[in-house]
Image: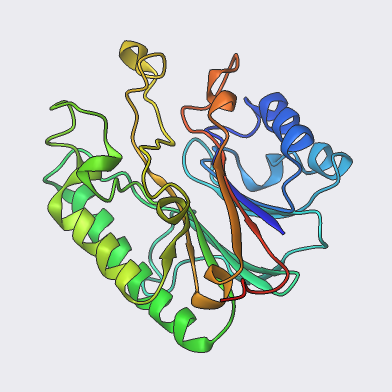
Length: 262
């Protein structure tokens, strides 16, 4: 099973890019973020023609998340991160697909900080941590996949002082991500690239992609049972180089049918 996450940065504007990547990479399950489209305008017909069923929570202009599957229709279990019924931002979608519970998330950016946007970011991550702990305790095979808008360590940011005041790298942001992982989740990308520097996001400005001046913001966190089946991890960096590309690259894992023998 191949599971991917991709901050597509406007699903209608970059539909051609998305379809080309789906055809090339053939992921079984895909979590999309930053749809930037109303619920009614999601390009379902084009994705179904490509072989994917979909569940999505849209939002005009900003946000929006989706789960695509070529293993049958996603069975939605949550359309909002629990803990704040007043939160109207479309940032979380949870669905069961082929025996795996997939949580697709687009965490708040939090800039500028300090301020209300950063406070919302930290509050959102605290809610995520509480809910993730419940998911872990359930015993279900779960993957938390998406744009967490956190570069977990200094090694996940290119050598620069440009981000020193950025919400993505603040100690409070990193601490909450670390607390999440310590619950018992495996950071699949870090596990797959233990000795390598790997980025998933490159700002459009100042030729950052061409200079490989990136950040690792897109993560797949796995429950222990899924971690035992982890076979391969990849970042499709070349997708970021295409014309009309998102500023993120797709990130993916491949799971074995059975756990690795010890």
